[in-house]
Structure formats: structure tokens, C-alpha cells
Length: 389
Ligand SMILES: *Cc1c(COP(=O)(O)O)cnc(C)c1O
Image (cartoon, rainbow, N blue to C red; front, side, top):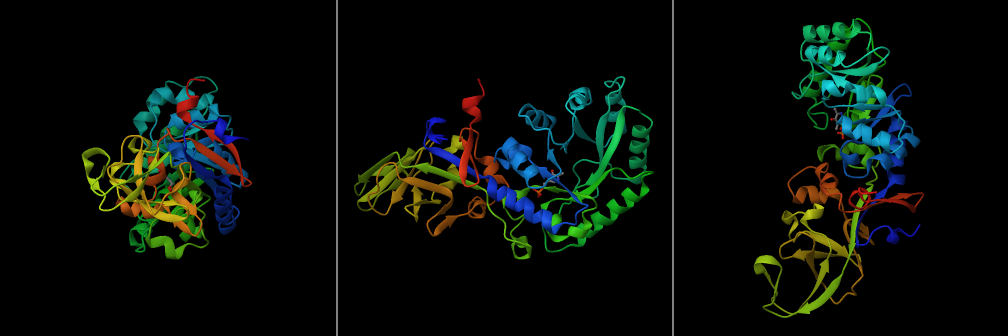
């Protein structure tokens, strides 16, 4: 496939599905066989591309998928994904028919919600639900045994609901100090023990807990960040049971190269002024692509060497200082590897004083994603270009 016939601007993300598959397979090998993997593909698969990552994860041995919102689940169904899907966040009671019609499992944690949702279900409708337990995350979920009992009984007495799972979420599984993690685990074990019957899926582990505590996965895990090849935290890097393969890279090309003279300035505000003759290159990526203004002075790779961004980052473009004259059209790597040099997602996260999760999520849908499988580009998705189809 000639990928360049699919979009008309020299900035793109490459998503290496071979890496995604290898990460899933590595986790699959690590976990006991009875533990199912739910691949977490919320937020457009952490900015990678949800349908494509979903397919790769399923091919690599995942059992099902998890997203944050019903819309994301419906979008996967629209794209032909037929695997089991669990919505991890709250849904509206009036939307339950959509979930039933598309065989999507929802998360529940309030008796009043179940009562209201029940009124939207008729006849042979069966809504599959997972009960969410809040054991210390403080986000959503039932937080006491009586509440859990009430929710369970409310579901059991209504024929239109099937309790498919029960789960909780850890707040600190990626930290070296495990005390809070063990406290949450103990509460969850108590909650699960109090149920009158065990649902099909009992799950607690995110990536961090899956990688560190494979035996405590109950019978399913929810694998997010590690599938994309990123460590759940800096602290955990030394504890990873196998090397992760970072699947996301970001590239562009120089669209203009020029020599500027001492005293000449670059970009809005004229905040950068050359002290001697310098070669300046322009790249067609800016803050509207998620390449935010705080990345000023971040380095990019040109001809396998680091070159700093100079001057303010504009909405659609930014400028870099080149070591010497370089041809327009030369590839620029903003995230990823070029020759011996590499700019990883963790480097950007550090620069922006945030976590690696946020980086691929923040590269906007204006940037097309090229999907690579078996070392070959297989597909391009650009939601901006395809939305009016
Ligand atoms: C996002 C999310 C996950 C995935 O977490 P990772 O740290 O990316 O593995 C798992 N469970 C819930 C409830 C989530 O919201």
C-alpha cells in the first residue's frame, strides 16, 4: 500500500502492531492459563487507534476488551469488532438498550441505577454487568459490604440482568511500597467472599499488578499501558519481568530549511534570536496536533542526531535548529528511534512533568496513524479525513 496516497501532510504517527502483539504475548506467557486478559483500548487505545489495537490484542491472545465509555464500545462494534467488551466507567441508565443490542457489558455500583435501568429493559433483554467495588481508589464503586449485598440482590431478583463480573481498581499498584495495594486487595477479597455466588470474571489487576503480582489476578486482568510497551511508572522499570516494546512513534519531515543571520529571530514573540549564522528547519506539527507549546526546547531527531526546537511552537508548525544544512523533505522523528538515537515517550513525560500515559493520548486525531503489521504498513486512520465518508 502506498501510504502517502492516504493523507496529504508530512506528519504521522506509526503504531507498530507487532510490538503490541509481542507485549500481549509476553504477558500471556507470564500469567497462569486460567487468567483472561482484557485489553484496555479506551481513549482510542491510549491514542494509538482502538479498532486496530483491539484486533492485534485479540490475535495475540487477549480474551476481551475494555473501554471507559459506552460510546467507545459502540465505535468498536461499528468497526466490526465482535469480541467481548466491558465498559469500565459509569453509563446512563437510559442507554442500557444500546448495550444489550450490541452485546456490551456495563459496570454497575448503585442500587438506584439498577432500578432505573431495569425499566428500560424488556422481555428477553439481558444486560451483562460487572459490579465495581471501591476498595480505596475513591472513584466509582460500592465501598461497603452492605452496599455490595444490596446491589447484588437487586441484580439477582431482576431477570434482565446477568452478573458477569466483579472488580476493583488499584490506586498504587505501580509504587514500590505495597502496603496500600495489600490493603485494597484484602478489602476486595472480603467483598468477593461475601457474594452469594461467584461471577464468571473476578478481576483486580491493571498492568502494574499483572506484571508484579501474576498470582493475584483472580481470573482476569485489565491490561492497558504495558500492552503499548510503556512501564506503569518510573519506579517499576527495574521490576519489569520482560522488556516492553514501545509501539508508538511520531514523525514528520522538514518542509523548509533556511540559513538565518546573527540577530534574526524565529517564531511568535521573537523570543529566539540567533547569535551566529544558523540553519533553521520548519516541521509541520504544532499545538493543535497535541505538540504543545510547553515542548519548546525539546529535541527532535534529524539524520539520527538531536536538534532542539527553537522559538515558540505555533498551532500547526514549529522550528528546529539544525547542525548544518539539511535537505527539505528530510525525515524528522519526534518520538521514536533514528539510527542510534532514541527519544522515548518517558523522556517527553519527564519534560512535561507528567506520566507516559498522557503523551500518546495527547497527540490529536489530526495526526494520521499508520499501522504496521509484519513490518509493513497495512492501514492509515485519520479521523479528520474519514469522518465525512
Ligand atoms: C485504564 C484502566 C485500566 C488500565 O490500566 P493500565 O495501568 O493502563 O494497565 C484498568 N482498569 C481500569 C478500571 C482502568 O480505568
